[in-house]
Length: 176
Image 1: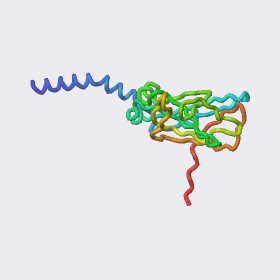
Image 2: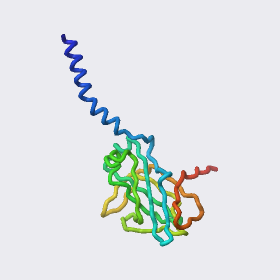
Image 3: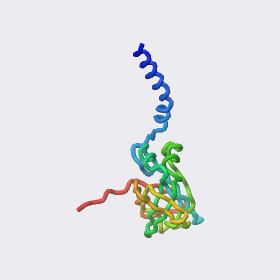
Image 4: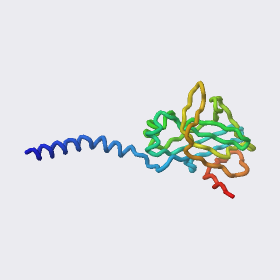
């Protein structure tokens, strides 16, 4: 009789946890590492001088939980040395989990480190690299990138108006 009660108790406990365990499994990330999705991250300079920036990142399950409450920050490095910033959602954790760990955003203007709107894109000044960071963004202090996650490069030597330009992997550094 004692063994029967233990077995029934065990079955009851396991069946009661099943929905919780099942929910955890359904909410797992399909991505193995945090990265910039280069197939979807791009920029366009229109012939009117207006710009459009599109960025997409993929997050793994562990990072989303470890960085809960932190923001994803994209740092855009331009040919002339200008750095511009964009916020990718407020909070990697819950925000990332509810979006399937694939976070995207778009803007016609980027910001400087103090959150002032800037638009450095021109035919002569285009992004040469972007970086994905985890950090904090405050209205009073601006962007505070803390941990770098990934980078992607743009290796073309010129751009034209009204064309979408995509990023790719950065060339490996050569060591002498």
